[in-house]
Amino acid sequence: MIHITIRVIGKVQGVNYRFFVRKNAEELGLAGFVKNEHDGSVYIEVEGSFEQIDKFVVWCKEGPPGAIVENMITKGGEVRGFTRFEIRR
Image 1 (cartoon, rainbow, N blue to C red):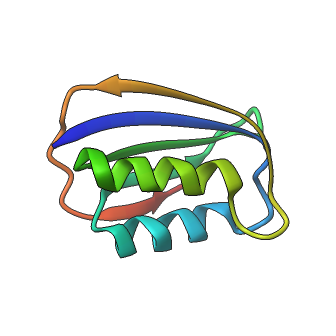
Image 2 (image 1 turned 90 degrees about the horizontal axis):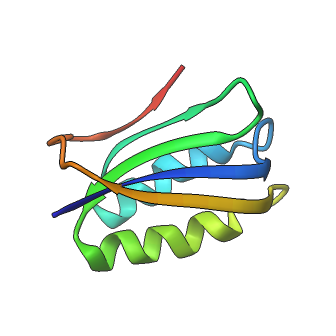
């Protein structure tokens, strides 16, 4: 089990990015959360296997229709033991 944080920068608010992040994370069996940031970016914390997270990161770089991902910053972190994936306000 690994934990990473992801900051997605670009046109990622107002395009259902968080909804699709949650849907994709749940389909991959990942746990964590996603939220919009005041600077217009989207922040994600996610936990799962390396293989699951690798697929998730590839998807996040593309995003849903209407999103334009300009940059992504990923960092490792301590496993927090999330049990589900949620959208936070």
